[in-house]
Amino acid sequence: MRWRHWYEAARLAGCPPAAARPAMMELLTEWVGPCPHCGQSNSFEIDRTAGRRQAWIEDCWVCCRPIQVAVGFDAHGGLDVVLAPAQ
Image 1 (cartoon, rainbow, N blue to C red):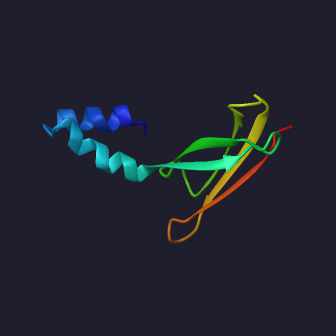
Image 2: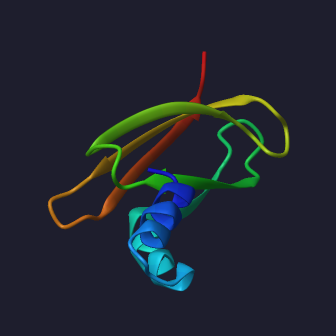
């Protein structure tokens, strides 16, 4: 779910908008890692509700080359992130 959905659900339930924000912050995690092409830092937003194993392709913010992002969660919610050049 995206933040706007949580915001809308909280609004419909009569909660103030700020009440929806803490719950969402626990569901999204920002992770910073180096581009496998140019080595520059990139920020990735990881959605904890999208499953224990996730994979997608995202372009580097600096060199614009594609990065294969693979994410896994352990039993305690820890992240295992692998960045590789996308084909």
